[in-house]
Image 1: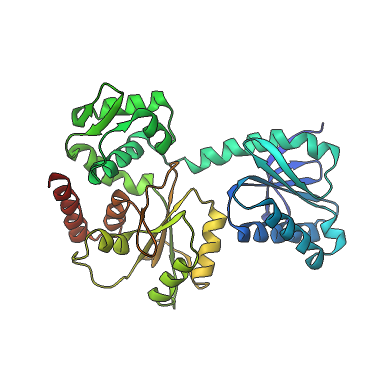
Image 2: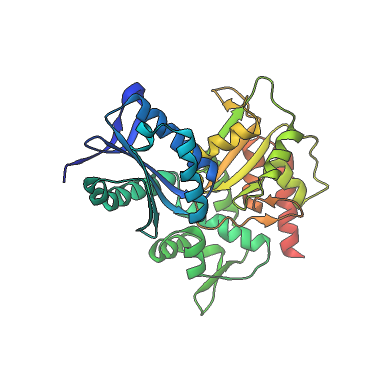
Length: 347
């Protein structure tokens, strides 16, 4: 088999995740939005129109979209794309490392390369997603959420599951928090008091550790309109944080208006975030240095969201909302909300 190259520059500075001879591979993990599938296919079709000797293979690594929905989407391409383009387009769906569906005619070299490319790109995707992660930062957040909610102790296996870290990493991290922990004989732990020293370290490094995407518009849509559009999506992996979250946890909090909307998503790739922003307000652009954002998306990298379910929409967890207020320099509401959570624990 011919050699595979990764992160290859194509025409007009476009990048290929992988390239095998004249077969371009595009990789997406955890694809649960049909709009992401549609936009990726259209982007690949454009590449094929500019590179008539090439083929494109779209790898979907894990999805909750049904096979029938994917088949319907593929069939619709026969009405949209010219045969000269569609004949050079393929789509492959993986689940738990194995191929479960193929669309289009793959050649033998493409078939032989699929598993290797998927393994390589899935590793890169995980590393890129977690490049800012810090075990102490993430595990302390999980422990604090459980402490604020008075949920009792957590098994180490639960901490592994929620945080996404291995047992040795969880155990080493808990040793650093030992002064604030109660350890039980069943290998579960909980905070015995508020970890003030580690909390200060957490908030002072949060701007570096969190995956944050900020946007602004010269003439933005009304905040009410943007909030309504988020609600209409009815997705379980997105939640309101910041000012909206603070009002959920403490209705009497001293906050007037919503000058900045904080959203929290769970393990979204950058393309999915960009699609969301365009749907909320096409005028929104990534912030430049010195510009205050009007909409901010925070991307959680742990395995579980810990969202609270409000009456109408999801709310980001207590720690996430506190960090949103701190990031927005809303220091007085930040302190007010933190004291409220502490008082709830001591009641």
